[in-house]
Length: 382
Image: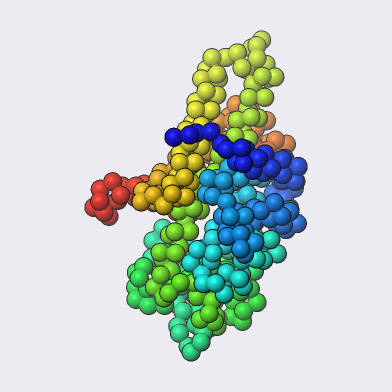
């Protein structure tokens, strides 16, 4: 059990940290304020291998591990959590094609995803199917060499801007066995988008409904066999949960660093805030929770890499812990700054707004508890 990063992992970490500091952090406030999707910065990240971190090298990916990816996302999120989170979703969608697609699909879609010439979105959630994802209603009716799609997806990161939509649709019976996975290309007739959502955070990435009206998609764009879509979607989410947890670590770490600097310089009642034992204890707890969450995220990533049978449960545990702790640390850092923390002059309020949604997406933290309880109880918890 070696808790140290390898020399290669330290190099990956430093590369991501330097990129985040130089190319993301200086622009993050402007991206947030003006709701800019930073295309050129994303493609610069892809040039470092971050567009297909754990996609095969034969199609342009970096071929790295899930643990490597967790290291990368923590670093990127310390620069801009919203942008790092979009990169994590793009990577999840690309991996689903890489892992479950056949050779022709991998060659067709992945090289341009790896460079981020094309952007990807993951489409599972619907207006009436959130946590109960297996109840999705978007229907794909087979018509010769095509499927005809009708339905709506909700809260889609990259909606309206992405080039590919990795979409779960119903091709068969009710429930998870009737779900299949299709790649829908932007520009396909019958594919339209809702208005951009007005959000608390995550403003550097577009979010909208994705709508299908008699949208004809080639059968050749189906990933896996009919009925395998739910399995593919859940496999993608295992890694997505680790990635978004790692993004929470980055936001929390950035806020802790700011809090430590603030208490070392700010004085009240004749002494530095850092000299008050109550605040020392608060900082100690923040650092401890951050380290515990990081260890669990990295363990979950390692279990994914190893194909461990408990990986899904541990990913759920890690996502729940890291996203709860991440938001709490951001919130405590804001509190330590007092009124200054509430101002947009400092990045803490942005980290807090961006980290909040991590407790909701990739499966709410309540659903994470359901996953863990079902595993513990052998499926008895319904």
